[in-house]
Length: 161
Image (cartoon, rainbow, N blue to C red):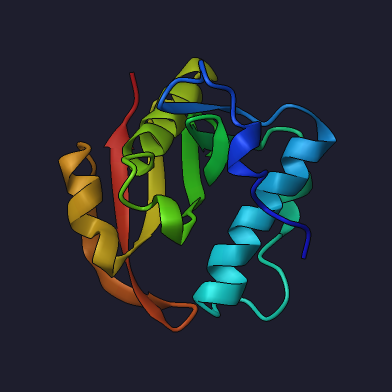
């Protein structure tokens, strides 16, 4: 696997502590996928080789990187499902950045991006251990938790805009 993180010395000294933005260019897309692979394949074992699917190649899909002091630390992906309904998924933060606070900005960025694209609602399947985090960000649980990829997940939703 390609190195996910540049050396700490490569981060810009004037970089904001936390920042999120849409992936820019093929190198950043590789970094985005590397972070997802590190979390969902290597760490959690949810996928055997790769977590990519057809949404990754869809031009309507938005791939986002989160940075901690200029260093790529996390990802989220969002895409339209049906008209103004969007789905947020593949939220991944590298273990060494999980206490940095980048998770909230990644989720808020995805919500705002879907709203800017004309979305009115976003859904997500959230690992059960992360439900309280999403509730604190204004999301609501829908139904009961269910197994997804061998891990309990909760369907969640949020109104956009």
